[in-house]
Length: 133
Image (cartoon, rainbow, N blue to C red):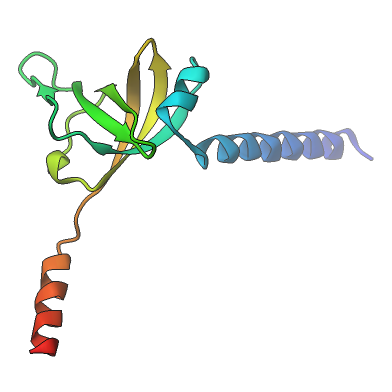
């Protein structure tokens, strides 16, 4: 085999192994307990906004940071500091997916995804009411 073929195969092997590592890390959701055990590691957590606790966002001081409280799927509640602008309709979200790291007793998120109520949900309910009348 030529040296260029060998180098090409090595490059492909490195690329495939890198993609497998990235895909493995990104596809697994953990809870706050597991995130605490994996301090320093980037993890993804799914949960729900704790509406009875304070949401702190002061855009005049720092428009790219806000904090809130979230309950994970097991009901454990932790404070979250998000290093992003507060999304519109944040308080109406049904589910939150955070990517970040646990430090001390606070989760520092650098990515946030929201599952918001569907704008078609009310329309669907109205259509169902019409069908059953």
